[in-house]
Image 1 (spheres, helix red, strand yellow):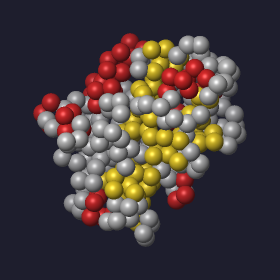
Image 2: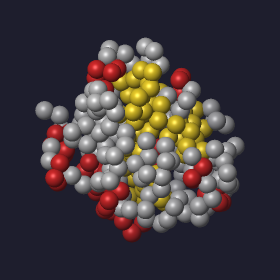
Image 3: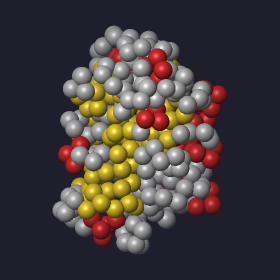
Length: 279
């Protein structure tokens, strides 16, 4: 039996990140994270005819082949034996800050030949190919005095680039063996925590070592987007244009706050490790 049934088999006992930690302006996840959100988790493109449709959480509150569209059709029937790619990651806060990728070749993959891509616990695994996969993100990230992001990700790549502003401005980067402290240009005081432990020294190589190889909860705090130069810019998730590289791995959860969330860091880390257990 998949481990996921251990965590989600009781609807009455289910907990939600956005209920426990209110105030996020964006949350994209493979699991329902709000007791009041009623929309789809993802909009999927079927590669046989490039049709798109949105799919709701399944009976366990997860994105799965048992997810249904608005017509009640299961994702398994809709996609058939084709591949499925993510057109939109839907923002569960209700703010409309979706992840969007209209360019077909840049969409992360979620279904291969009719089979859902999953991690070792059976959770859906949006997969970034390390070459083209990325999302455009709304400008809601711009201009905040504080930006606090939570991620659940898996990678064994030599680089991790998540949110990136224009030109050379980017908010989170790791690079194997790099001693550069330029995690972000004009970055202010970014603190990066992995599974609740602050990364030290604060450099790209140390971050890479912390996130390499296994599922990790990554919390990035106090990133000043005003100092980053993020003002009315288009933000990208998963791609660093100047470096010419993309995120290679799985990202199952992203939440962002425009306020300091350090007081709840331990509780958030515990929650994410419980509901997105390490593979």
